Image (tube, rainbow, N blue to C red; front, side):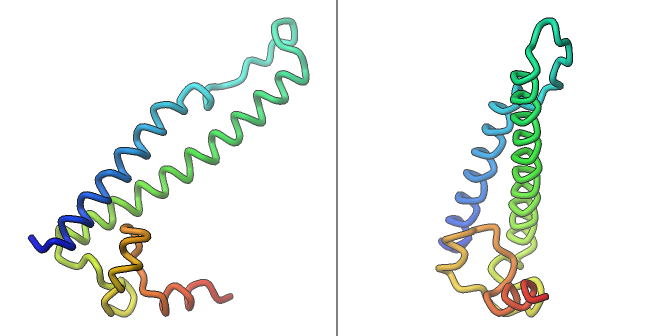
Amino acid sequence: MPMETQLALHSLLNLKREIEELEDMSRDTSRPVTLDQQSVGRLSRMDALQQQAMAKASERKRAYALMRIQAALDRLEEGDYGYCVDCGEEIPLKRLEIDPAVSLCVNCARASEKP
């Protein structure tokens, strides 16, 4: 296995582990909020609901990141890692070092951002 592939695999697996650890730590903040006014004041309940909403948004971001990482791991296994999924051009090593789960070259990424 080439050195770049080993580094990419190592980086992707580390990212995946870090995200999974964050998921484990954040499980408490996404639990349902008790709506009993006797035990929790209105402002405290509103604060808890806001924290819960932020936790759910973070959870969605982590799920998306895990999906990107898994797709990159799949491309690694198939031998397609490091190539743009749209045009097939090689993605520069520096771009992969910044984000090992990236799937598009710069040109295709720019094109996909345009309305």
